[in-house]
Image (cartoon, rainbow, N blue to C red; front, side, top):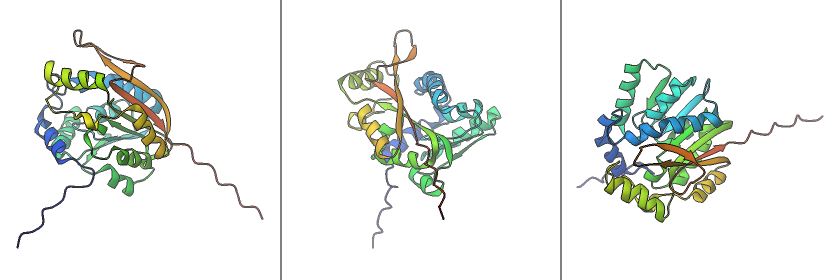
Length: 251
C-alpha cells in the first residue's frame, strides 16, 4: 500500500525554497546574484532605523535568507536580532557568517512566521519582512503574522515589487533577462503586490501605515536611491497602535 506524500507546510513555496537553497553559498559574495541585496541594504537599514530606532531594540527579520539585513541590524546596536527562514542551507550560511564576524547578538531559526507568531506573540520591537512577500502563496497571512509578533507601538516593515507594466519591464525583463542582475525566474509577475494591496493587508492586520518609499536604480552607474516613486521596488513602514490602558474599576 502506497503511503500518502507528505504535504508541504502551509504558505511555503517549496520551489522558492529550493531556488534560494541552491544559491545559499553565494549569499555573502557581493559580486554574485545577491549583489543587489548588498547594494540596497544600507538604504533598507536607514529606512528601518528612521522609523524603528533599532538601537537597544529586539528585532525580527522574516525571510532572512543568508542574514544580510539581520546581521546589519545586530551590528547597528539591536539588543538582539532574530532571523527566520525556511531555507536551512541559507540559515547555515547566516550562522557561520555571524560567527566569523563575531556578532553574538543574533540568532537564526528555521520556522514559519505563522508558527512563531503563535509561539511568541507581541515579542519584538521591530519586525522586518523584506523582499519576501512576492515569494509566498498567501502574503496577507504573512502580514497578519508579522502584526501579531510586534509589540504594541512597535514597527513592522515590508518591501516588495509593484505589479504593473513598468515593474514587469524593469524588475523582470530587464533585471533577469537583459542585464542578468538576478537569476531568471526569480520573480513571478502574478505574485507581485501593488502598494494599495499591501497597505490593505496591513490595515486588516491592525497596523497603521506610517509611510512608503520607492527604491530606484541606475543600471549604468549602479547607484540605488530612495524616492517617492513606488512604481517598481518599494518599502512600507507600519506601526502597531499602542494598546489603550484599561480604566480602573470603580467601586
